[in-house]
Length: 478
Ligand SMILES: Cc1cc2nc3c(=O)[nH]c(=O)nc-3n(C[C@H](O)[C@H](O)[C@H](O)COP(=O)(O)OP(=O)(O)OC[C@H]3O[C@@H](n4cnc5c(N)ncnc54)[C@H](O)[C@@H]3O)c2cc1C
Image (cartoon, rainbow, N blue to C red):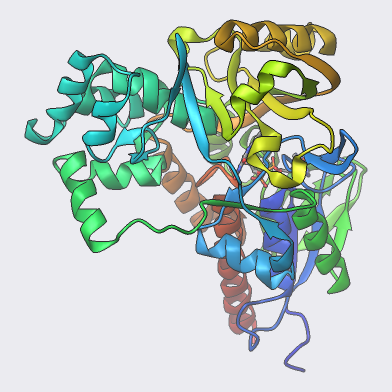
C-alpha cells in the first residue's frame, strides 16, 4: 500500500468552520508521514460557512454578517489561516477603544479580563462605578475563598467584586461575546475567567500571572480583509482540491452503527457508509441524528439552549458621528438595555471598511439569552428594526444619523448557551460515545467552546482522534 493512499472514509456532518477544518485536516495531516483519509462533508444549506457569512455592502465586496474576526492568540487558528496562504490578507482592528453605555458612554477601564478587574487602579479612575462599588471591588484580595458559586459567572463575580462589577462590566462584556445572561452561564467554560478563579483571590492570581507572563502587545483579533468567508471558501477549495467531496443542500437525518462501521442517512434518501464520523452541526440538530447511537447523548444535546440575535448593518451619515472617532463601539448593560445590546462602529474598527465618503458603517446587535427576541426574528420588518436602532442609539448618545443603506441578518438560535455544569455533561456524552460509537466525534460551538478559534482547535483534535481511531481499526483488521 502506498504511503499516500487514503485510509478509511470519514463523513463530516456540518460545513461551518468546525466541519470544514476537520475535513481539511483529515485530508492535510500536520504530520506528513500520516496517510490522509477519504472525506465526504455533508452540509444542509446551499453553502458552507455556517455562522460565517460575508456579503457585499456599501460598495464593498465583503462585509461580514456574523463574526468579523477571530482570536489571533489561539495558536491553532493563526497557524491554520497562515497554512492556507491567507497570511498576507490578514488585518487587525485599528480602533480598540470601546465604551459601556450607562447613563452616558464610559470608556471601558484598562486591565480587564472579560470584564473582570485584574488590577485596582484603572477601576478607581473610571466614572462607571460608584465609589462604594470601587471600594467593594478593591476588597477582593482580602475576602476568603469564594463560596459555592454553582459554576455561574454571575454568582462568582458578584461574590468576588460585588454587584456593579458584574452588572456593568462582566455581564455586558462576556454577555456581548456569547449573547449570554452570565447569571446562567458556566464559569468553567470561559477559560480566561476559570483560570483566574482557580486561586483564592482573582486580583492576586492576576498579579502573579502578570509577573510570570507579561501581557503581550500582539493584536488580539485578526481577520482576512475580504471577510471571514475567504477562510471558509479557501477551506472548501482545499478540501475538494485534495479529493474530498462537499455535498451541500443535503441534511443528515440519522447515523447508525453497522458493526465497526457507520451508516449516514440523508434527507435526499441517500446512505453513505463511513468508517468514522465528525459531527459538527449545532446541538439541537445533532440530537435526533445520534438518537439511534445513544438516547443519553441525544437527550443531553436536545436540552442545550440557544440564544438568537439580530445583526443590523448600516451605512449612515450625520455631522455628530465624528463624536465616535477612534471608538470601536459600545456595549449596553442590562439595566440600560431595551433591544440593542451592542453597537460596533465597523468602519472605525476596520480601516478596510472605511467608505470613501463621510459615511460610517455600523453593526448593531439586538437580542440575547433571556431577552425577548421572537418578535425581532419573526414579526418586525427590516425597516422597523432600523428605526429601533436609530432611536436607541439617539437615546444612548444623543447622536442623530441618517441611514442610506441597511442589511438585516436574523441569527435564530445561533449562540449555544453553556449552562452551569456544561463541561461535565459534555465529558459524560463523550465517554458514552467512546464506549458505544467509538468512531464518532462531536465538535463545534455547541461542545467545547464558542467562537471561531475554539472551533478550529476542536476540529483539529477531532481530526487527530478520528485518524487514530481509523489506524487502530485497521491494525485490528490486519
Ligand atoms: C452574529 C454572530 C457574531 C459572532 N461573532 C464572532 C466573532 O466575532 N468571533 C468569533 O470567533 N466568533 C463569533 N461568533 C461565533 C462563531 O461564529 C460560531 O460559534 C462558529 O462560527 C460556529 O461554528 P460551527 O462550525 O461550530 O457551527 P456552525 O457555523 O453553526 O455550522 C454548523 C453547520 O452545520 C450545518 N447543519 C446543521 N444541521 C445539519 C444537518 N442535519 N446535516 C448537515 N449539516 C447540518 C449548518 O447548516 C451549518 O452550516 C459569532 C456568531 C454569531 C451568530
